[in-house]
Length: 121
Image (cartoon, rainbow, N blue to C red):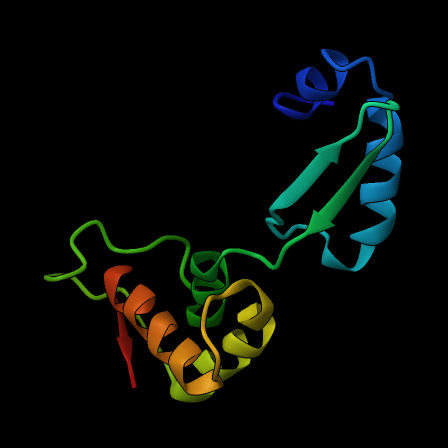
């Protein structure tokens, strides 16, 4: 268990390896993807965790097949994403976004894509 997970569990006297086992069990099909997790600790030395969807930037990089975004997104474009790709990503991210429709989610993702130096087609 690497930081910050190990110290967070250790200072509360919790079994961190139990978290690792449960996390690995729930994320077997998402191997290699960055997954944010919200862990809640309770006074009886138990915990729960919620696995969120991957960050939009990671999904956009995967869709555009690029290793990283542009350092100067307003000048240098590094790739392209289509509206169809943005709709697929919006469906994945929908429960984590603060919007009510797929169109508004696509609009948010298009803004993220542009700030990464991607052209939205």
